[in-house]
Every structure is written in C-alpha cells, then in structure tokens.
Length: 469
Image (cartoon, rainbow, N blue to C red; front, top):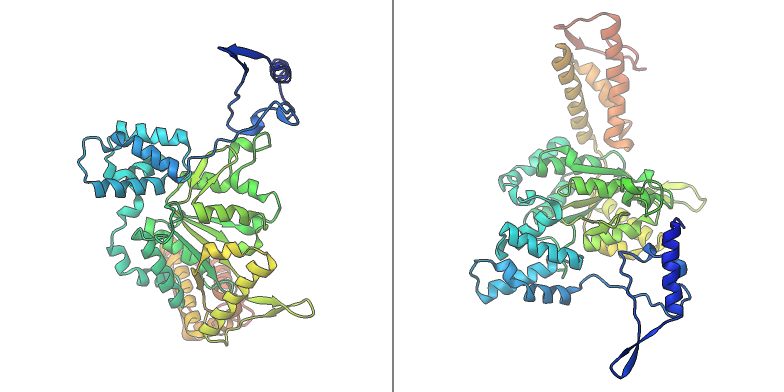
C-alpha cells in the first residue's frame, strides 16, 4: 500500500512479463524465461502481484530440519574441529549435541556459527559454549558458574524469606537442581527447551511470587533477575503484541515486545508470569512455542531464546469455583489437610485448561511440575508477623536511629488481628501491621516530635488502630 511510483512500475512490469511470458531457445529446446524473487517474508512483495496469477508460484524455504543440520555438520566438520584430536565416539557425540542445540537456526545462522567457531577458535568439545556465545553474546554460561555450595544451605536461605511452605520449597529446589545439573528435558529429543518449568498454585498471599524472586536471588545473586509480568495487563486479544512486539507496519513495531526485549537483555533469568489465568487465551499459543521449543520470533523477525531461563507461572485457580447459582464458592479452605487441598487445586487447574479453555496441550508442556502452596497456618502467621515487625523496627533504627521495642500486650493485640485475616495470607498480615502498628506509630513519632536517638516501647495499641501507648 505504501509503494513508491517507481516500485509500483517495477512490479507491474514483472507481472506483465510473467503473464506475457517469453521463451528462450536452448539448443533444440524452447524454455520459459524464469524470474526468481527472494524475500524474507511473503508480505515484502505486493499481494496483487502474485494472488490469482497462474504464472507465479510461491515457494517457501523452510528452516533446516534435523537431517539438514546433520548434513551441515558432516560437511563442515573441519571448521569445528580445528587442531583438536577426537576419537569417532567423541565426534559423534558432539555432532549430536550440535544438531540438538541448533534447532530453529536458519541456514544463514548455521553458516555464521561455522565462521564464528573458526574465527574464535572454539574447539568441537565446547560447541555448547560456542552456541551460547552466538545466541546470547556471553562466553561464560552463568549456569555453569553456580557453585554447588549454594545448594547446601538453599532450604534455610529460602525459608528465611518464604515461611511455612516446606513442601513447595523442596519440590521447587528439586527442579532447580535439575536445571543447574543440566538435566532438564533429557527425555526429549530437542535441546532448546527452557531450563525448567514451574506452575505455582495456591491461595493468594502465601508466597508464590516471593519464592520466584528468592530463587532468582539464590541462583543469580539478585531479585532483579526475576522478570515479572502481571498477566492482568494482558487481557485483550491484541495483548500478544505487547509481549512480542507489533508486526511490520503497525505502531510500535520498532520498539519490540516487553517479553522479548527483557529476555534479550537478560537471557539467564527467572521469567515469572503472575496470575496466568487472567491472560487472554490467545497468549497461550505463544506460551506453547516457548515451552516446547524454547524460542520465539518477535515482531521484527528476530529469534529470542528461552533455553537458559526458568519459566514460572503463578495462579489462584481452584481456590474458588462457580456454584450452581452462578456465585463463587470456596473450593478449598484452611481446615483441609495439605494433601487434600493440593489434590483439589490440581484437579481444578486441569479442568480449567482441558474443559474451560480447551487447551490440554498446555498441561502436557507443564507436565508434573505443579507446586501447590499451603494456607498460612497460625504458627507460620506468627513467624511472618515477627519478620515484618523486625523489618519495620530495623528500618527505623537504621534510618532514624530510633529503637522500638514491642511489649507483650501490643504483640498479642497485633497477633489477634492477624489471625483474623489469614485468608489473605502474608499480604493480609502486612495490612494488619500497617494499619495497627505502622500508622499509629508514625502518627505518634510525628506529633510528639520524637527525635533521633530515642528509645520507645510500644506497650499497647488501641483496638481501632489509631493510637499506641
């Protein structure tokens, strides 16, 4: 639609030449005069040029399949071996690794990888490092640099931040250890799947998002390596363009997608899709490709790789179900044993994907990697409240040099309020601490002009949360 006049003339002449084809004599034969137009994608050529034109055929050159990649490494082996000496078994093993790891590569990329290995002198034994360097621009894979000692005290480290979720922590750590050992997806033929896939299920406020951030901190040393996407922001049918980028010709094409840009910038990370049930169903098509192939093509046609990431979905699915009268009713409760609650949640989630969405293939990609979080129980609620109060008093000591001590009566009052709000999990406890402790304490410090270096003891808190004594 946006062709210049000279371009329109060019294609018109080509079209007329194809309709009024000429023949050339070759020896005793007359042959049709063929013209080949090569483009990255079909829509680079005006549709009116080839639609309903019987003299024009559209041929698609597909990406090299497994056999083509095998032929490539067989014929170009000298570029990868260099001066190294390998026996036949080693060569065969590295060839197989090359074929698996280059799944999704285009011919141009295979050739570029060949030249890259030759110029950078990557031996065949380090073909995986060479491919990572080509894909991500890093010579050292952070997964290979995670010391084993990190996992010796991993449970204690996580439990410092995520309280009362022992079963979820152990199950998550098993999957993380599998990823760190490079044993993820060994049963599958392809080598491009994500490092790990987890589906965190359970009531709100029990630590699902916090566990994802804690795992990122454990593995990569920083919570920021957990890239979070709130799926409530992707409820529209066109939301996939926000994630992957707008197609050519649309507004925002040059900006790329929020997901693809983030993964390009930090390919070694935890990718968290929070409250996945709120996303538009069309987005699940994109997840299928990520979970199956570990890669995605963005709006600009660039390939983004997820094979060094851990994908985590969180969901509150199954906490409530639709009753006969159309109202939401509780499906699980804090009175249930963990095993019963876990079974009910997983059944509800599977029914949602299979019956409501009609997408059982999503479940197949997730596999058995469902991690169910328990309700916050009374003993855990006490720990969470103590932890939050410790953070508040610690901040006051650090920033204002004010020492706060909490008396037994005040603590008992806060505890009673928190226990009445456990349905909202840790967030509910945080709301209680804010309303009944932080707010009246801030008012007292401000109104009474309490200065730096003071010591205070909070003995009592009014039932309406307006004053502290």
